[in-house]
Structures are given as C-alpha cells and as structure tokens.
Image (cartoon, rainbow, N blue to C red; front, side, top):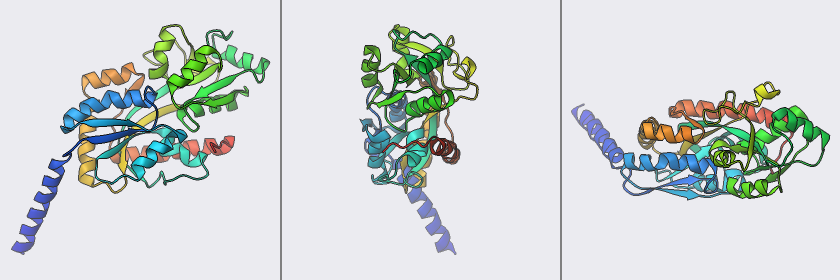
Length: 319
C-alpha cells in the first residue's frame, strides 16, 4: 500500500515537472491565412504577450491557401507536443468540411481546442465609384444591373466568402465570387475597380474606410461595431435576420497532452484579459472571448451544425 502511494506521488510529481518544463523551446503558431489578413492581425495581437507568459518565443508561420486547409493540414500532421499550434477560424474548424468533397484531415478529430480567442463581424465595403451609399441602394443596383457586380473574398469557405453568399441568397442579387489569398491582394483590385464589393474583416478594411478609399455600407454582426458606430448592421438596413460572424480559436494537434492544453488555456485567457491586449483586439474590430477547451469544443460543434445547414441549402462547393 505504501509503495502504491509513493508511486502515485512520484508519478504526479513527474507529470507536474513535465508540465512545468513546457515550453522548452520556441513555439510555432500557424496562421492559415496570409500576412495582413484579419486572422493574422488578431493572431499577432495575442502572440507577443502569450510568448512573454510562456517564456519562449512564438514564431508566427503564415500558411495561406485552399480556404485555410494548407496551414491546418500542417498542424493536423504535426507532433502533438505543444510546439505547433494553430490560430484557427470558423471556416477551418466548422465550415470547410461541408464545402470540400475531400480534405487531407478530419476537422472534427484532427484538433483539440485550447480557447476561443475572439469573435468579429465583417463589414460590407464597396468601391467609392459605385453609385450606392446604403445596403438598400446596393440591392437595388445589383438587381437593376445583373452580371455587373463581383465580390472579393480571401478564399472559398471563409467567413468573408460566406457573408457574401448569404447576402446573395437573401437578396437575390447576382454577384460573381472572386477569391484572393489575402485581404491586401483583394484590396488592390477593389480599389482599382476590378471587383466592386467585399465583405471584409474589420481589422483589414478599417484603415481604408477611414482613408476614404473604400465605402462601408453595413456590418455583418448582430450589433454595430464600436469602431464604426455610424455604420448600421445589414440586418437593420433592410435585411432582417442577416448575421454572419467570424471567430478565432487557438487549437493544437489531437493527442496533445492535457497538461499542456491546460497550461496554454490558462495563459491564453490571462493574456486576452490584459488591458493592452483587450484594447488591441477591440481596436481590430474583435471582441475578446477566452472560453474553456470544453466550451470552445461545444461552440465549434454548434457552428458546424448552423453553417452546415446553410451550405447544404445554398448548394455551395469550394472544389
């Protein structure tokens, strides 16, 4: 009996020691979208302080392409040791499985959630030369000029793309979808007039809206953004029931030890609640969250059910 107790004490001490030693080297944070994208901006808003909390450098690794699947696949196939993490999104963790006929990993089992970091709506922006100043005017223009509108996104299946598809389905406006690898690339053509419309993330679009290079017509969330309080929601602009919100979550490869997940969760939530990090997230158009791994898993599942139904109803496919 004494031997069993002693063994249990020694085992617990060994586990605690192993957890305390993590991380012993730099951690790679894979961002499955391009530098300057909404996801990248938010990831970098958190990563610096998280690195300080962990006592190790966090190297942001942008792996854009295929609706985030290229970067996500890197994480899915990485060693589950806590040294490769993912700054995932709604599309990667909940939606892509319904848009793609085949995927290199199973999004429902390939990752273990650490915490939902933030939630953010998108903003409907247009080229200022387009003769519309409200959502209602855009709908009227689109119906009166079929085939003349294109809308940009940062890849099939992302919240930016789905925001546009939901808008099309609820209004009957025809808009061709043009996918780009990152918001800055889309902005070049949007400002240049090659595309006319985009449902962009607030962090990426805000500077261009403030500079007058893009015109904001509405936000996709259920309530107005504190960063653009004068811009109404799309729902209150004549399209009741419209809502499309993106969210971001920190995740690790499935099989990552529970003690490492717990450490990462504690530090992530603490960092999110730091005044300077909270301020940066809000300034980027996102609301800090900081949920538990279990709460995050339930959120991922509920979002998959919601968007899976929408994708099937609209008959959307990304390949």
